[in-house]
Length: 624
Image (cartoon, rainbow, N blue to C red; front, side):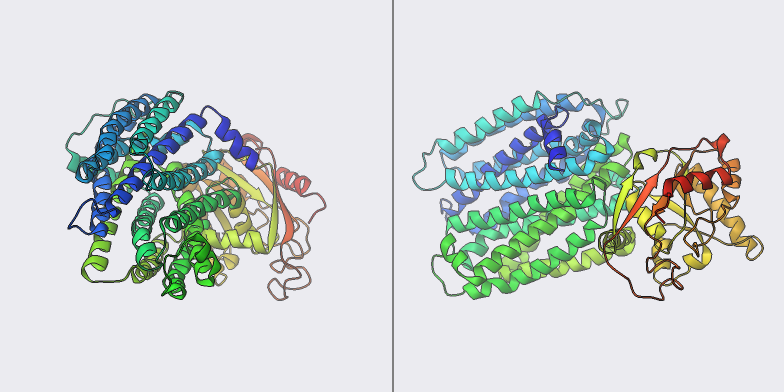
């Protein structure tokens, strides 16, 4: 996995883009952090430091709200590498103006420059995430997004620390202005190496009415529910991230009595946590878009956020807490663990959501859907700043209490999203199943096409066969399942949510039998993957039973490729009928080794039930 990430970074189709976005995020945070410290130094009298910080955050993100609709259209209409080069050249001009502001400590002038930085980032945003699927393969999307998130938050970390160093007492005044210009120039030269990325919709007619176009792209994002819920989830994460990072300076100053070095350490801890979480997400996802990690991220965000409310209290009464003093106190270590945990589970949460948006959106509209995401991100970040101003500045809520409110609100948001799209929770159940009870070895998955209709046939050994297959196969699968198994308590919820098709015998329940074949035809006509267990029931002796001729009826109606598969190692599982009825005996062991072997596709004109049984038997071999 490390090798695959390093190869991706070294490739021209990803490396220059990664460097460009890394340097841009780095520069943004050098500028913003230097400005935060300039404000904190008291050069502006009569205005609250916390208020100016929140105003700065709002000015940076308001352009996302106002101009993302235009940016999304431009990103879809024109060649993207050219756009990136022009945007990065504009960054050099903006940083040249900002350098003058730093030299003269002109805070209000720098706030205006911050707005221009937000405007430049607004036009880069839709390109940033829509260019990834143009240059990467489907199986590289999670790796690419993990690297982008790791790089972004590493840039935030290094940029913030650099901003602190550049504005520390004794540092030459000219160093910060020079740094932001130099970083912008480096970003421009990196952008010049990005390969061409053809426009997604060159015939697009521009809509200059930003209000109506904003409504249109929001409607486009709603076309696929899982994409829309992912966009909402991403926006909520930025609400949380903006709240934590904006209030962290005040938290360190007023509640931990910490030094600037301590502030840099805790900011680094949070940023490193997101990078580690993104890295682990890539590892645990198996290089596929794994929705099951998103609920794990939600749970971790809330648990560590709640504990952050309690952990600082052991530091009360201490003066001038530096890094050494914090690490000497159990409460200080607990604060660090909480911030690290929030970051790690934030990485688990955000990486799969971006991959879902990229993989499930219409490619012609992807930049505009990313723009819709940016609009909602901006709206939620503005609301984050407004919420902080109201709760902390007006209602006198303490920063720890504010963090507690965020953690509890995250529970409510998670319940809302996962209730509307239960696929997240179902994928979590499948992910846990395939990593606790079983170790699944996969062979031949490349035989299943990345798009287009096909039918999968497999031997039927246990009640969890469909769950294991769903966890292994990258595409969503519509399973045809014997109705008594479909009706099992608890599993029925999972099957229904996964659009499983129940079937029964023609003599016992002709209506369900007929409707099942109608549903199969509808799914194949829609280009989906359908999986059937042609034995019609679980094996009672470990052997593969006769294949029913239903598969021949399906292919006669929809002549699509049929892909044989075999499960190995499940006979003897608590979910199989070995040594008694399934689920009537305790598990013999956890983390059992099982295998899924996928064979070559069989053309529609060669399909027969008997031949498919022989192929599945050969794939399974003696490993029942």
